[in-house]
Image 1 (cartoon, rainbow, N blue to C red):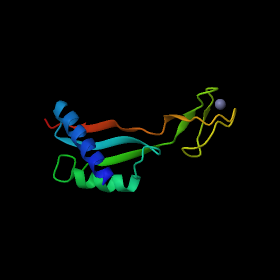
Image 2: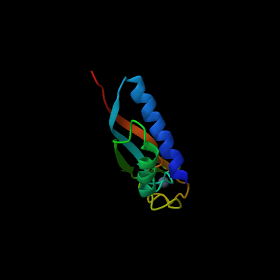
Image 3: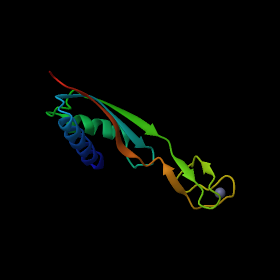
Image 4: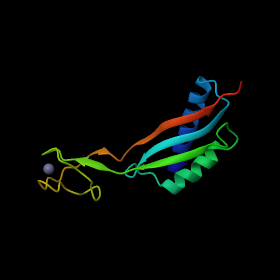
Length: 116
Ligand SMILES: [Zn+2]
């Protein structure tokens, strides 16, 4: 399952960051996941639960932001929302599509707790 390896790397990254901050618990992880990233949101949520089990992220709330796609036309630089991977520029009908948003797969923020 593709989502599981991604979830494991998200959990690993969060643990590394939390350890660097001398945190003992991560209360929240906010993720930016583009709707064109190839990730299934429900599978990712499930996989995060699996990956976080028996780690310091076991109780962590994962908040997943769905980032809608934005395309820039390579011909006229018009910005638009593509209907799919094969849409075209509504202004000049150019078919080349360049996504400038919507393929994100990243940790946006971490909320950690430190014990005295
Ligand atoms: Zn165009």
